[in-house]
Length: 272
Image (cartoon, rainbow, N blue to C red; front, top):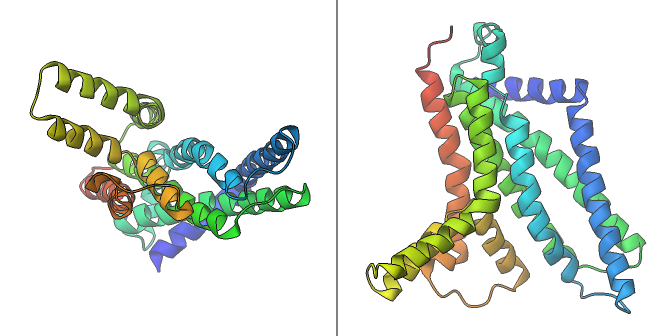
């Protein structure tokens, strides 16, 4: 299949350019560093921390790291080919535009996933070797969700790269989205709740529903909800937006819609 051919070439290029090795090294350092730090903290407080504590401790850092990596790994996937003119050569082969976009997505997702899995394995081995403890099923569950989160942000970056014909604009939007999801989303929802209450918009229940919905559609919030469900620490959902299935739907939308947007734009784009 042409899609698989494009994906394989992307992975091979990442191996040749040492990009995959660098990403693997970064994830190994991250996971082993977290494992060592966690074990040392347990020793410092006079014993081992709970088995689920390590997995819970890495959820927030993973939720910050993977969006950054996903955006970085995919932002030049298509627009970079367009800026160098190599996209014409790629399309002169038996590849359609959809083959290129989907192949780039699969290839970049594979790169992020391989690095994440190797890093997670190294982290798990490290914590066991240092005498710490963890719950394997929780760890595996969070790892699988992390792979979906990484794929979602690869979808965002590849979608942007396919749908926008300027590399500088792709970089600006990508950076803005990282800042928005990681830093500004909670500030916005907090400010919105104050404004709605200040001007007495609707009932209190309606205001809470609106703010809850906007908070829940952040892919990081969806990831956090699903990891809490996997670990059994989420408590009883108070609204439909805090249900695990809604969080899963949110991640699915972020996985599919940006890529669909990029493909739609790229199909009708004129390649100069």
